[in-house]
Length: 43
Image: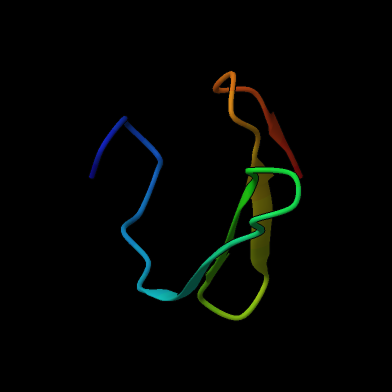
């Protein structure tokens, strides 16, 4: 566990959008989000 109550999940896909610089992450069956170049994220 990373934090109490958080479980590990496998990362299936990481993709860099070269236009925006965002990283798209797909993890497990129901977790996906984008990380922007400044470090913020969007679920």
